[in-house]
Length: 335
Image 1 (cartoon, rainbow, N blue to C red):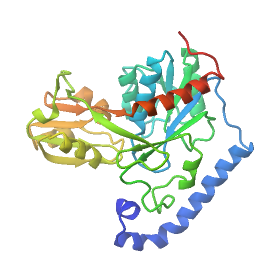
Image 2 (cartoon, helix red, strand yellow):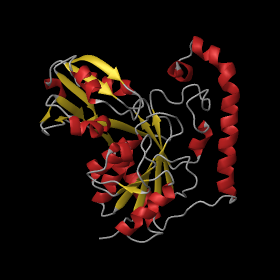
Image 3 (cartoon, helix red, strand yellow):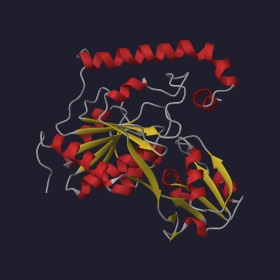
């Protein structure tokens, strides 16, 4: 119903408009007031002693932010920087904050995306609903640049560079604010960010096109790697912001998918639930974000498909140059 309201004009669009329109106006007024308080200095934003790069979006739901964060971290590591990542840990509850993620951290405490970033990059990752506290937990570890996974609207943390990630196919739907539409902030907010990354579809003028490139399917239990189209009778599941994106990727790779099941973003899974799903085919294939939650209970026929953000070389260099320019104001990266 919400999908139809936001992205597909339908009967629901006209039925719910009178109910959601005043709530959308109230949301916008509160959002603008809060932002203005930080911009005017009425509320103080924490300024870190190292550069802060925000990767976020102006729409609700998954647009591909986490692959961009992973790409940024790996690129900076290759350049000799020591990046750290902060996140609010959406959908999780830690025993205490800030939480430093390690190999033993449960996704129930950290959230799936922080755990994925840690496992993919090995970079320090801190989780705290108050992102300034997460930043301060990372500083003693020697990080010299902070990447925030989401947080474009978290104005309590000052930032030097802003990325916003756009779903290139769904774009901004009906261009209305929550809950009438998918927007956290108006489309005019894009005029202020440093980089607009367009995930799939056709990038518009001034936007940087990005694609998500899949690698080999990896067995959750053994680590074996195979071409996904070599696995017969697949059951595909995805607990991400837009599950059809994952299913379309499998189709493009020629995977033999007999059944698909989408779940809510960040959803936790019961073993019985996954066992029942896996019985619908010979192999179960999932996203990497789902895999970080399922590793402890994995069966021999469970697989995941990692994807990586890819950019044109000139766009990579443009981004790197902007970060280097900002870093010069804080000092050189550690050797």
